[in-house]
Length: 188
Image (cartoon, rainbow, N blue to C red):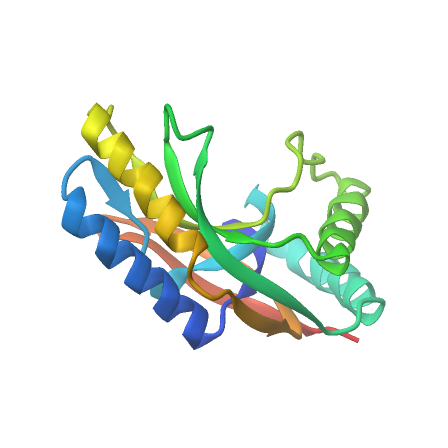
């Protein structure tokens, strides 16, 4: 079963994602696979394929981790691109790196590595994926993205209280990924 651990989003953050996507879609309507804002989340750890028999051990360890982390706030806003604006492959909305968010992700990564899940090789970069760019963009489209990034930076940021993490099951389908909550862990 394909799975991952993530922070679910509050409704107002999903709305912000949908609004930003709408603005971008009006200007680039091809070559981007848009993420469903209602499925958006902050991934803390992608587990890949796991055996259902490992869920009780995962749950036990995630419960221990979340007891040690108190509820905290995150701030979302600002447009960004992976790997960069010149050759964008992923368009995202930013998540400011609160020290507790970094601590939570590191605890999960460290603890699960002891259970045989490889540590993440890339530095944790919290973000909310808006879309994945499937083909090269024209120079005018790149300029539009740069202008949209500037416009987005002028908008007020959204704050969200993080009080839980979720172990999700992910099923790929023709319509895109479908996420099912397996276990929910309250912080603190």
